[in-house]
Amino acid sequence: MKEQKYPLSWKKDDFSIKIFCSIPNIATGIFLKSGKANFVIDPGDGILRDLNTEIGTKQILGISDIFVTHGHHDHIGGVWSLLTYLRVMRKGSPLTIHHPEGCVEIESILNAFEQVYAKSISYKLTLQSIDETTGFTQNNVLIKPFRVVHKEFLSDGSKREVPALGYNFSYKNKTICYGGDTAYCDELVNHARNADLAIIEAGHKDDEPDDMHMTLKEAKSIGNTAKEYFLVHVPE
Ligand SMILES: [Zn+2]
Image (cartoon, rainbow, N blue to C red):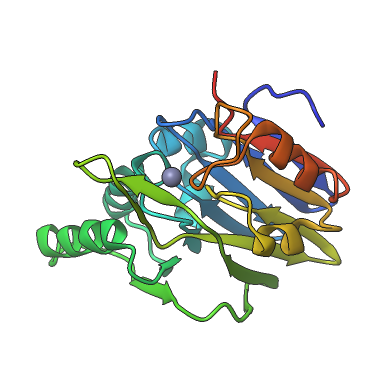
């Protein structure tokens, strides 16, 4: 395991990833670059600030795809600022936002954005709901979504499952596995195994397994099956 100091970076030739800030309940934000492709994964709060520092406006305007694992605020809190910034800066190329089917948060944000700015959006914006976990290719990157198990609390203290995905990104024989937020599950175990980099959450504080997040022990056991790994969403 590498030392955990944000931003976490990993690079192999022209395939790289940077994790800006995975603070549980505050913000996750990931930038993936492969050749000429610029992707954002889980644009949590602060993503626009971090992208501006990291790559600047020109490359931000070239972002082609955003991948959302689930609708919790620490994973999508930066969507509105990013979309409106792209409008103000007159982005011309299309943008696709991929999200798990039934992710009402992202659908609501997009509806509001299109309603407010109906006459002034400079770019083609597509919402791509993922219900089948078959792989697809964007900008020479093979993307393989997979289902993970994640929940949230209702106001009466009970829990409900939320639509949640992890993604494997493969480019030139290298694979990055990002599990998003999840309890220990076979899908993540299978997708992280032999990955060149696995990004694994360890969001559960106690040692007893949980149905929302993973314990440190569970996360490390999965991380150790990949060639390298980062732990994210670790309680402070
Ligand atoms: Zn979550």
